[in-house]
Image (cartoon, rainbow, N blue to C red; front, side):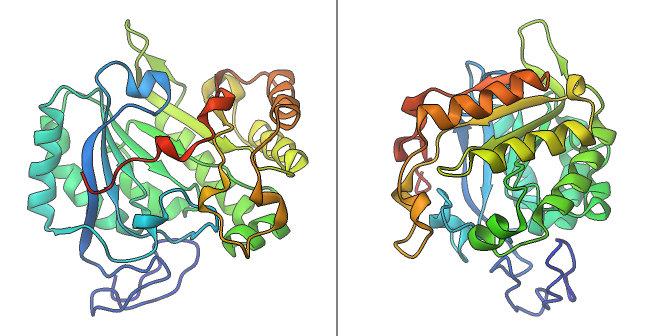
Length: 292
C-alpha cells in the first residue's frame, strides 16, 4: 500500500505513509460494524443471520450510497490484523451462517493475511461482498480463502457509471472481476438446509429511469459467465433518501413497478435463477445501524 494499486482506480497513494487513497482510507483497517445481519439474500442470512464485518471507506463513492455514513472516510474502530482475526472467530462462535466481509476491496492484501489465519478454524463459508469494481489480479489474492462472492454489477453505460460513481470503465472491470470470481468458486452449491456454501451471487440494483441500462447489465452478465452456475439478486431497494439534491433528477424518486417488472422479465428470458425484492424493500429502514 505504499503505492496502492489494489483497485481499478490505481491512485498510487502512499497509504502506508498515512495518505488517503481514492477509497478515502489509510492502510490501517477501520471496522465500522461487526454483527449478525438478517437482510441479505435468504440463503446467506438464513435464520441465524450473516456474520457481517463492515469496513470503512470505499473506492467507488456512488452518489446514492446507502452506507455513506461509513463509506466516505475514516470512521469506526482501527483494528490490527490479530484483533480482527480474533473478532471474526468470536463472531463465528455466535452461530451465524457465514462470515461476510463487506466492502473490503481496499484492504484485500491485508484481509487475505487475516483469512489465512482464520480460515483453518472456520466451519462456515467466507463471503466477499463488494461493489464489483475490482481487479482480477487483486482477487487472485483471495483464491482458496473466499467461498462465496457477492458482487454488485451496477452499470452498463459509461455515461451512467460516470455520473453516479465517476467510473466510466465500470462495466469492463466488473465483467473481468465477475469472470475471475466464478472461475474461483465454480457453480453454486447449497447445503441440505438451502444455505449457500459456495458460488457467486451477482447483485443488480435497478435504478429509477434506468431500466434499459439494467437490461444491458443482465445481457452482459449472461454473455460473460454461465447463467446456470450463478444466482442473480435483482434488487429494487433503491431509495432517494441518500441521494443529494445535485444527483440526477431520476434518482430523486423510487423505482416504479413497471420498471422493475420490465427488468425482471428480461432476467427470466435470459434464464437467470435467483432472488427478487418486494416493493416494501425501498426504504432506509434496512440500512444497518453502524453505531452498534
